[in-house]
Length: 142
Image (cartoon, rainbow, N blue to C red; front, side, top):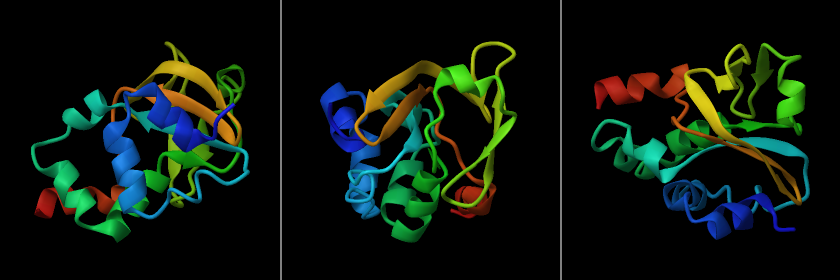
């Protein structure tokens, strides 16, 4: 089995996410042994952001790191355990809302493919990029 980063690369739907992980210097951290959950937005999810948003983040590594770590939980949460949760703390420091009333939603993002296993964690593919409140202002002021 591959680590999270290699799993994303091998899948082919995450070129923007992998580039962002690399730009934010998080590549090594996501390849190390751990037990994490990554809510992974696809390239299509990134394309739904307002024009220029990805560039703003790629050119601003500290904010990019906040954005990316907002998608990471420091424990492995398989979809079968999501029913027991209403929220989960992120590595970024904020909390994600979890709703399992109709599939699995994390904040406003729908999990479109759960439980992709990797050596160092689990990936849930989401249809929307999660934006923490702490950097939402960056999008409004840019």
